[in-house]
Image (tube, rainbow, N blue to C red):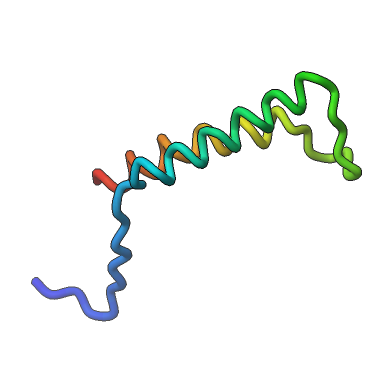
Length: 66
Protein backbone atom coordinates (compact mmCIF):
# COMPACT_ATOMS: atom_id res chain seq x y z
CA UNK A 1 0.00 0.00 0.00
CA UNK A 2 1.48 3.34 -0.99
CA UNK A 3 0.66 6.75 0.31
CA UNK A 4 0.85 9.54 -2.19
CA UNK A 5 1.52 13.10 -1.20
CA UNK A 6 2.55 12.24 2.34
CA UNK A 7 4.96 14.39 4.28
CA UNK A 8 7.37 13.01 6.84
CA UNK A 9 8.63 15.30 9.56
CA UNK A 10 11.82 13.97 11.11
CA UNK A 11 12.17 14.97 14.75
CA UNK A 12 15.08 13.96 16.95
CA UNK A 13 15.44 14.17 20.72
CA UNK A 14 16.86 17.36 22.13
CA UNK A 15 20.52 17.18 22.96
CA UNK A 16 21.67 17.54 26.55
CA UNK A 17 22.87 21.07 25.80
CA UNK A 18 19.49 22.23 24.49
CA UNK A 19 17.68 20.58 27.39
CA UNK A 20 19.94 22.39 29.85
CA UNK A 21 19.44 25.75 28.14
CA UNK A 22 15.65 25.36 28.06
CA UNK A 23 15.52 24.23 31.70
CA UNK A 24 17.63 27.22 32.74
CA UNK A 25 15.32 29.58 30.82
CA UNK A 26 12.34 28.00 32.56
CA UNK A 27 13.95 28.42 36.00
CA UNK A 28 14.84 32.06 35.30
CA UNK A 29 11.25 32.77 34.21
CA UNK A 30 9.85 31.02 37.29
CA UNK A 31 12.12 32.99 39.61
CA UNK A 32 11.47 36.29 37.85
CA UNK A 33 7.73 35.76 38.20
CA UNK A 34 8.08 34.61 41.81
CA UNK A 35 10.00 37.72 42.84
CA UNK A 36 7.48 40.02 41.19
CA UNK A 37 9.19 41.03 37.97
CA UNK A 38 6.51 42.35 35.61
CA UNK A 39 6.58 42.43 31.84
CA UNK A 40 5.04 45.39 30.04
CA UNK A 41 2.28 43.27 28.50
CA UNK A 42 0.18 41.98 31.38
CA UNK A 43 -1.55 39.27 29.31
CA UNK A 44 1.16 36.70 29.96
CA UNK A 45 2.63 35.90 33.36
CA UNK A 46 6.23 34.77 33.62
CA UNK A 47 5.28 31.70 35.65
CA UNK A 48 3.14 30.43 32.79
CA UNK A 49 5.93 31.03 30.28
CA UNK A 50 8.34 29.16 32.54
CA UNK A 51 5.92 26.25 32.79
CA UNK A 52 5.47 26.20 29.01
CA UNK A 53 9.23 26.06 28.41
CA UNK A 54 9.67 23.40 31.10
CA UNK A 55 6.95 21.16 29.67
CA UNK A 56 8.09 21.75 26.07
CA UNK A 57 11.24 19.69 26.65
CA UNK A 58 9.26 16.66 27.83
CA UNK A 59 6.69 16.94 25.03
CA UNK A 60 9.38 17.31 22.35
CA UNK A 61 11.31 14.26 23.55
CA UNK A 62 8.11 12.20 23.83
CA UNK A 63 7.17 13.21 20.27
CA UNK A 64 10.64 12.27 19.02
CA UNK A 65 10.33 8.76 20.48
CA UNK A 66 7.14 8.01 18.54
